[in-house]
Image (cartoon, rainbow, N blue to C red; front, side):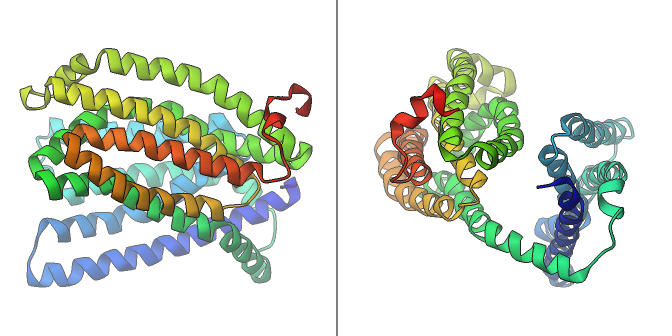
Length: 358
């Protein structure tokens, strides 16, 4: 966006995020009130805690994404530092005072830390947000644009969430809750890969959009290929490190219940499946740069259907090791689907290998 349009559009986005957050808070309270009246449970406590934290969470995340979109990476990093350092401080205070942990207290600490970071971020954005008069018609037009772009992406994220958690549902149905816990414990260690995933997902979509706008589609495809090759190499090195030290990592993080050759194998396969997912994500960000998000939704539906069939078969055959194995096949199919959707019929695959296309 041009600079003179970016500020008003950013304000529209933050206003809509605020409205959406309030709607979610109302839904959380609708869950909490009857449960609290009839029977106080962990669910009611979690609903109240969520109602406390939702607005600060989503507002801070929106502010950070504004920083990423305007390539103010240091501001985004400082915003994260404020939030997480306050969270750590809250945890230390709770431990020093020997406070009994409760869901409401934990959510309150997280909500307060996000609120502080969001307020700092809004102060930093004050020139973008408040140098233009607020016009309802402009906000309405921005909402229409966001709806056109975001409806498929948002629905796709919801379907994708169902697919990502489908393995635990299938394992629970076929093999019982203890093996769900073992599987989640092993695969959770792959979150060591998250910093690279998040760096790519937060920053590269902006660069992809700039290249598509200024140089066109063939240049975008060439750039995506270059980024895929460049970043998949260090990602593969990290995956290799996790795989080679899988048993030792389990022993480091958990007690003897979750340290075994089987769970080391599950962790290894899960780390490799993350590499396939990482490679496929580059085609997704290309589609986002084109504002062509419907294929992303289609790919999530494809993944959900495919995993419900392949995942169930692999888990029934191989046990919990079949779950990440099925994901390797899933990410391969989805990656090919997204590439075809991105490249289109008029763009040859050779264009991505042509340096002059840049």
